Structure formats: C-alpha cells, structure tokens
Length: 249
Image (cartoon, rainbow, N blue to C red):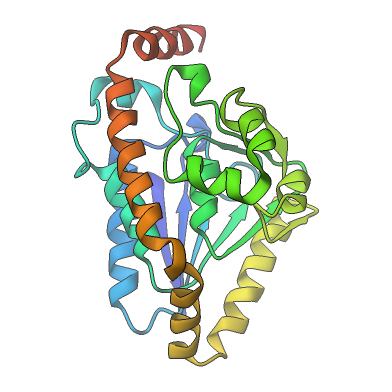
C-alpha cells in the first residue's frame, strides 16, 4: 500500500504524490509512514530545497481510509499518522501544496502547515470530524479560529461545512486559487524554481522566524488534539458513525 505514495526527485525539488485514485487518494497507515519518512529524509538532505505535496490533477485526498483506521486504531502518539504530522511540522524546507478536487479531513488541516498552497477554484475542502464522532486534529482548533475568526471556524469544525478553493484563498487558507489542478501543479513548480535561486540559509531562517512565536503552543495543541482524537476513535459515537459511513459506501 505504501507504493500509493509516489516519490520523485527533480533537481532540488522533492515531489510527494498521493496516488490511490481508486480510493480517492484515501490515506492508510502505510501511506502515512511513507510520507513521514520522506519528510524526515528531505529535512536531512541539504540538496533538497523544497518539497511539493500533491494528489495529482483531480483529487488531493479524501482523508483517512476509514476501514484501515478501524482495523488498526491509533494507540499512541508514536503511530504513523502523528509521525507524519511531526515530519511536516518540523520540515525546515519550504513545503508547497498543489490541491485539486476533494481535500477532506487531514487533507485540509495539513495545508495549514504548508508554506505555499495553490488550489483549484473548484476544489472542495472539508473537515467533517464531528460528523464522524471525532474532533479536530493537527492544530486546526488553534489555527483556524485565529486565522478566520471563531464564528467562521465553528462552521467548518463544528458543522463540517465544505468550502471551495476560491473561498480557501479568500480566507487566507491558501496562497492562491487557480483555474485547474494542472494549473496548481504548474504554479507550485514555478515557486519551487524561484526558491531554488534564493539563498538556502536565508529561506530556512525566515521560515523558522515566521513560525517561532506560536511553535511551542501549537505543538502542545497538536499533542492534546491527538490524544483526544485517539480516544474518540474508540468511542461508541465514533465507531457507530464510522461503521455507518463504511456501510453506506
């Protein structure tokens, strides 16, 4: 299953592409593990200047593979999901996301930790945690209210309302919205090429400085959310909601 994440190197750019179209790029624990290791190695490789994360031209990711998660419930913060979160969160290289189609659950929250996000206008982003008996993750309960206000964040996190790529850009959740998934990829590669011509240490230090003021508080929130998320996965509410989701599928 880990081969459902394609890793490609083009010069100084490392591209991580989720490639499981038959399941709308749903993420399994094996895929999380492969992504986590890729981010960790990219951070250690001085020849890599930027990381591009994408799901291709038509679908970013439909979120977690529910059946896989029910079979292998999260047991602690050392599992592949949280290893992936740490890998992305700690990556000192610029991370560029190219988003098209569905971006569900962590497919939206991970964008909050990318440095550049280019999204097709008709993309559909959604964080249906409560709808599945779960709770927000990856720092979204802290970042979203600060970024878009408590009232709008409540619509997205408590009601699980979906929104478009165009709205994501207008609210500051994305760098820009573009015409298509291919346009998002093209723009991401263009930005990677620009970064390749800039001073490496200056880029690294600038990213570090921008993130430093909230880093420790955000780490604590991510850990607390993770503990509660793992608890919720074992709750009767979540088991019923997730099982019902699978039966409908």
